[in-house]
Length: 296
Image (cartoon, helix red, strand yellow):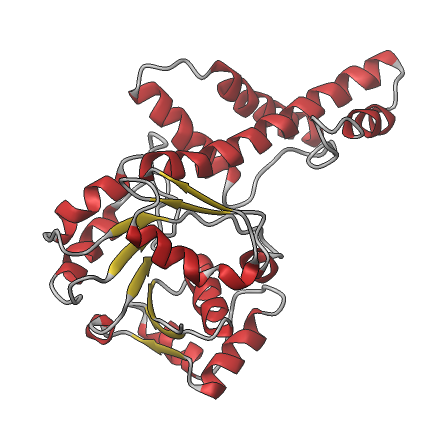
């Protein structure tokens, strides 16, 4: 059954989600506060360089399943609303939820009862639990549905995900089922869990990849000094099903828009909880050293 889906934020995650949900046959209203961006998207101009994204936007605009607006009021009739808002790191590493905290109360004043409010952007543990208070209402179910999109593969990752993670309190609620139905065409495993576990799973996944990359970079340095070939060592490791071949290529260090931000956020969460996450802190330190080493 086609749903009316609202997307708040037309950035990397929001635009990909909007275009892909429209591709799956839903009616999507994407809201963004930047008038110039909305004007461009209405004309089919996509500034994000993602394979297939511009084509999906054009298709959605052409068949009328995808619209862009600056008016939040157009979300009044939505069945589900996905929050795809920026959460940049603050100076201490914690995610800055300022935009989300400004926008969510506004949504609380206009959404109809029963609309499911879903966090899609990467947010700290406990954010979904805070949403009813920010919305100022208890008749809007909330869910955490973190994205796992790789740069350069976002459309494919959305339409063919490894897994779909849905966190609600309690797990497997009616709201979770409604969100899960949106992804049925993907045929991916659906993880129904509590909201805190869903939120932490996103950070944990990216932080683990960062640790794996730092590990192989230190291993490469050891290979250089020992006369071994890190490529052969990594190939041998990768044939072990418990390890796998992914993220075992040495390089100049990890970066991008997700790993640095998410490792910092997880370290901040650990510090706030009184947990010594030394292995992750070491991975960050190794990464900084690797970059300096490559420059030298």
